[in-house]
Length: 355
Image (spheres, rainbow, N blue to C red):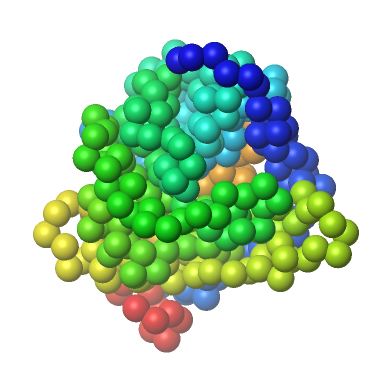
């Protein structure tokens, strides 16, 4: 990779995002739609809790249960390097997948490379590289995407789409014109599966259909209701009276709405697809509800950020908490394995959500 002057604006932005999350509890919106879904309790589950099978396969590798540590951060700052290392080590210890934050920064600041060189800390679990799709309209190419995959030794590549965040961000990149064509080019040239991910405003059925046409077969809906990146960018506004980030802090489809729309589109496709639920998933019950709605896997980030600032051991504890909650939910639903759960909408009490 050729040397380039460090882009401190991009690097500092990552730390600013973390500080905003620490200062403002309202960035966590708590409106993903899961609370509206009521499940059927089984007083006689006819199961041994400890014998419930939660393992699943993702990107050709086994996971202990269907959890992905969602994209958070990356960059040259020492704090960010520690966060990513702790996340990777915890993912390896617990047998879950991990996605890194946007790797754009590594093309403008070589010191950021270390925050993405994680395979040594997570040798066996799925790792997912990450590039902002809009950057394909701003000079990044399929070759840059391949370099992002190479530095991580990744099993797949996220192309994240974040039009709301870019629209609100003071220095946002807003040219999303004909982006699906650029995505299709990356898919055609990539040596690993290319996945598409929103960052908190969700996918409509039309988005899923367009991405599918571009060759995408892995979809992460990242719906509204968890972390509001619009509100985060509000804290970075350049004018005191600029409230755009607040006006749009709850814009988009909830995670539940996105799952329902994506499932409806993908059910009509012949190819195998992967549907990931993320956006406000905060416990194992949310995970169970996601799989009932058709997800294959669940991603979450916010619950792991503070633990990752402390140690890998603290992240392990947070992941184990999710696993215990998820296993308990299956037990109380009478579901002995994931096949008994996934898409089984009979487990939802009637009248609680539109299916």
